[in-house]
Amino acid sequence: MEKGDYFDELLRSPRTVFSFKEIALLWNDSGTKAARVRVDYYIKTGKLIRLRQGLYAKDKEYNHLELATKIFTPSYITFETVLLQAGITFQYYGKEFFLASYLTREVKIDGMTYTFKKIKDSVLTSSLGIKHENFYSIATPERAFLDTIYRSKSYHFDNMGALNWDMVFTILPIYQNDAMKTTVTEYHDHYKSTL
Image 1: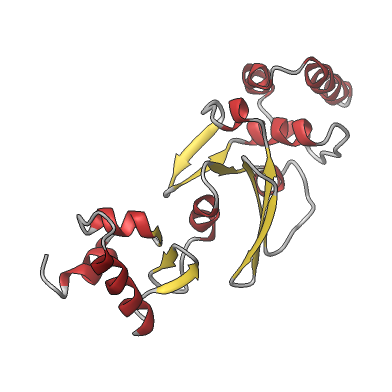
Image 2: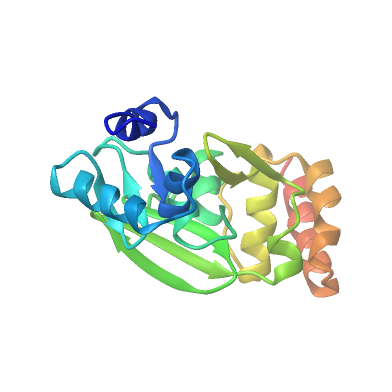
């Protein structure tokens, strides 16, 4: 690759956020010192933005959801972020995204808050009810509903009519939790009683 081609290669990529490892792979570089020097140069000249150690954006118009799932991997967008988008809850959280991960942390980057909630590994790594799009993973409304119950047994949902209940009961077994099955059944029975 020619000297000027490295940055052009980043610009051609449809990604808006890169880890250092992704940049090195894009450049067919194994993460050598030369790649680090190149990245540092692009940061100093304003061509790349360092969002956090090891994470970079092409410009300020980066996709926050794409960044969210790169902070800690594996992780996926779920909980209130998805529930609000699906109209299941109406509580607005402003500049905060909620994710499932292998740890519980709150990370602030560029005025946004990324809240990670721990989920057991067998659930975290199950692809049931997870969509992969635009370089990030996001739960379906049904998976987000179940993730929320898994973390909080008495949560208030504003509109359970937006759920596909068949899908809820298809995903439920990945949690391997009898108490949760009872809770979900109670939510379902309550929903049916309001029809």
